[in-house]
Length: 243
Ligand SMILES: [Zn+2]
Ligand SMILES: [Zn+2]
Image (tube, rainbow, N blue to C red; front, top):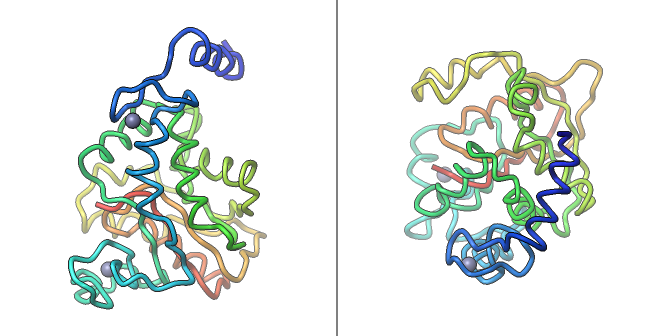
């Protein structure tokens, strides 16, 4: 069965046979997406409305973008270590716990791709009305062949086709070691030098590197440092969840 045919069949089922129920509240969703309008609005969109790379937000750290308990310029983590040394400013949208954590697992591990549209909508909220190109964090080699898709590339594709946001796929990864199997320090050492700008591509002057989850920040920082070495002047980061 081709992916297109499976997708069409799934759409028909969602529309006419199996009514999609909201993963959070269990009500039938209006649009066939995995979350109903009300849960998506209150749990996601409402929390990031007005968030932008152009404004300071006193509830968030000015460097890594995490939520602050009290209004200070930088969070304790950023004051202590320069863990995002090559990233000029990061915005991370939602904390990685509770329902958010379950949704990310359903999307990424269980392959519930219906969530891609919703997550892309959240990312698009940050880009509007900006016109900065987005650079997706590259998947490990062979991932698309093994799994059939990559969640970051899927979001990048939606941002490009539905929201007309420019996407620059200029990074590549050359390691087969999976980050998630390593500890914090080993991750930092492992990823450094294994992400590079593709030969013959000159990246734009200002870019936003996009990833789904920030844990140590090592992946994001490795991408930013490769981009800066290749001539980028400003590298911002945008991650859906932060741990
Ligand atoms: Zn709901
Ligand atoms: Zn911070």
